[in-house]
Length: 340
Image (cartoon, rainbow, N blue to C red; front, side):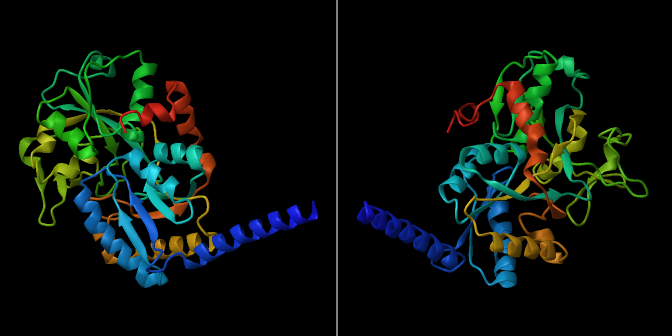
């Protein structure tokens, strides 16, 4: 018995030793920290902006990072769960809830966009459409970004179900931009995607205000010299802005039918075995980086990327409302990952 105990103790110490060495080795060229982005916008934009972020983090911390953009929200969670000691990811609320349940992913922070710690789902229809109420969506064709998208699928699904509305054909578009373009191109009757409030001079937008706080005329919507989308002096920040180069008349062609209740912003989450001291170091580096001009060209700060202004620490309980939405829908992890 004593011999067996000694053998078990030696084995346990060996595991601890290997884990300790791996943790100490994390962030080297041979064992870089794995950074994941969900493909909610164009993958190439995230790859290019991710390299800017990687360089900034390496310069600030001396650690090595490797950036990846998996093919779907589900694939991002899968990748993070496969590397619980070396992965970090910028994932939406629904993806975090799934990952937390699957392998214990832990949230460190959430995005702040132009002062808002929350965002919304929006319902988009053609501007000349005869759809004016939520009830008008009954039987209508629907494009959504991804089944793992909080604003693009989970929240709208709950709202539609709660209202007793059953859409017609459902199209998984592959991203927010693609969902917006599906309406623009007349491929579907409506789409759901993320809504961030417009930036207005002199007065801040408040929840309860119209999502389009302007009287539209054809010549009021334009792209300025910096490539940003405006209507008059109001800057458009919702997902329609992401397709402004492909569809410069997107505001003239597509309107916001309504927005949802507030949703917790996207997260910066870590694998459960990621070293605590490195989490703090990376968090501090990101907050400092968000004050620099280079931030606006990174995957996180770019308007064509995630449009984060900065990030703030949050706890797991913030996402209980998202867990409740899963329960209301009766959705399981297998439902979300069904097409993987």
